[in-house]
Each structure stands twice: as C-alpha cells, then as structure tokens.
Image (cartoon, rainbow, N blue to C red):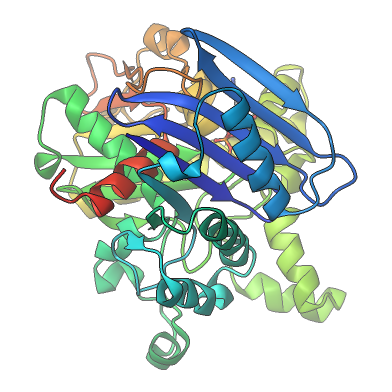
Length: 411
Ligand code: ADP
C-alpha cells in the first residue's frame, strides 16, 4: 500500500514515497529553485535493494511541471506505475489555524479554509495549496489528506496560547500562539516512548527541533502544552535567519530611528537575523568551523543559540514540573554534539547531564531510501535523571502515517 507525501514550498517540492505495508521508503526526492533559470531535481530510490540517486538540472517552470517531473521519475524508475495506484497522498500544510486539530481529507471546502488561513502564513499556505491543486488535478480519484504543522499544538491551554494583548485581537484577528513543527515534535515524542518501552501518555517530554527553523515543545501525556514558536514561526529560539524572541519595542524604535518600512522590518527579522544576523552565516556547520578557528562573532552566535535553548529547557521543566525525556532532533539537533553539549551545560542540578563520549558518537543517519526505523541514541550520563535522546525526525513518515490513518481509520 503506497502513500506519497508532498511538501510543496514556494520554490521547492519535496516528495517521499512510502510502502506502508512493508514500512519502507521507496523513493525520496526534491525539486528546488522552481521558476528560476536553473532548477535542481534529485531523487533517491531503491532498485534491487540498492540505493540509487538521479539528478537533473533542467529548468522547472512551476509546480505543475515539478509534479509532472516527479511522476515521470517515479514511473521511469519503477517506484510507481502511476498516481492511480496510490492508496493516498499526504500534503504538508503549515497553518491550520484553530480550524484543524486533526488531519483533513482534502475537498474544495478544506482547500478554501486553507486559503482563508493565508494571512496567518502568507508564504507557506499558498505554496502548500499549489501542490494540493496540481496533485488533485493529476490524481482526482486518490484520497488526499492535509496534515497541519500547527495541529499538534491545538492542545495548548489558553494560558499558554494567549498573548498579553487586548483580548479582542484574539477574538477578531486570531492573534494567539499556534506553534509549528508539530508533526516533527509528535513523531519524535512517539519514537521516544517506543524506545523507552513506555506509553506516551505516561511521559513528560521536552522536544527540541533544531534545523534552519528551530522550536522547543513541552509534551505532557502525549499532548503539546507549550511551544516556543508563536502566531508565526518567528518567535522562540534563535534560528538560521529568524530572530526568535525579541523585545517588540525594538520594532518601533527601528521604525522611528531608521525609517524602515513594515516590509523591511519583516525581512530584517525573518531573513537577516538569527545566526546570520549575528555572524553573517546561517549554516551551523560553517559557524562551528569558524568558531573553532577563533572567529569571535561565530562563537557569539553559537553561544546565543545554545543559551536560548537552555532557557527554554528550563522554562519547560517548570511548565511540566520536571520531565522524563529531552529530545534533540532536526539537522542541528541530530548532528551537532557541540550544540547539544552547550545547550545542556551546567544543568546537572536540574537533572540534565550529557555523557561526552556517547554524545560525540551520536549522529543521525536518517532520510535515505530504505528502512523506516530511526536510529535512536541515548546520550545522558549516569548523573542525569532525565533521558536525553537523539532521534532523527521523519516528518514525511508521520504525514504518511496520519494520511493512512485518516483514510483507513480501522485499517
Ligand atoms: P530545515 O529546517 O531546513 O529542514 P535541517 O533540519 O536540515 O533544516 O537543518 C539544517 C541545519 O542543520 C543547518 O544549519 C546545518 O548546518 C545543520 N547541520 C547539518 N549537519 C550538521 C552537522 N554535522 N553539524 C552541525 N550542524 C549541522
């Protein structure tokens, strides 16, 4: 039984094809720089139990062409006979507002609601919808399901999602914390429970998704009770190019003092801030190298990034009244022993201690075509009362799982 997962961004299309019967990834691919003069198309797939990769750099003009290219590649390489043979297609959708607490079977009504939520995610929801529209045209008879990044956080209590702003802004303008990365936080939390042989309902978990975007979530009995991203993905941890938490007064100050327009401030906070703003670089691998070579700004960026994580761990330990598990995931969380060590530095007195050797040897190997069991590593020392786990996330697999559950609830 095959499920295709699509993650359609403004200039990219990521896809993964799963065989949910044998629990294998059959193919995983990416079309990047859609609409630009040179696009990059890459697909990894399994043939005769061997992993293959194909790449192409012909221009891909739009999402329709990206999806056509994907279908051709899947067919030519015998991953799929055609979209008709799919049991379902799962779509990543960034913003479900308060309308979607669960995945939704896509029809015109659901597409319209996703469109109506565009003001809350002006870059993401329209891009997600482009993928949905083309996929529905190409495979009108295949059930398609929207899985929302915000849905997992719909369990937040009012005291965690309400901002200290006039209440009518919530009632009339939908201003509240929504949170993102929900699919990833939920996936790694379930994997942690499986790994520990516990029911997720009996665990208190702090989950750190550290990639280009980064967020921290407090999970109590399998439900998100607080999360660092807010109404938009700008709040919380320091990120690659996003500032995370700042004093909102800075915006007024900058508008007054520098005459920056609203769009310029938006770009400043979303695209020019975070790690990039501090040291000019947003790729953590480069920053670590530069910091190691004595670059003071890179070192500062690294310190700010890790200190913010540490503060969030502390505040969620308070929110949860202690926790059983701390999870690191995302490109940085899975691969950087240095960031993990520095984010957990000097926290023994609150039950968090990393074993240096285990931490150094823990690096993830997810994302390749093949088996779907993540390699989970425990990196806590004996002095730690909390388990500290490195878990490769797999948002696409979680979307495939939720898609299947939604179209075959008794299956
Ligand atoms: P996205 O949020 O775009 O999905 P990823 O989860 O892939 O991003 O994470 C990208 C980040 O992970 C980049 O900052 C990259 O430098 C970092 N990263 C990947 N591998 C390593 C590594 N070995 N050490 C440190 N950082 C890494």
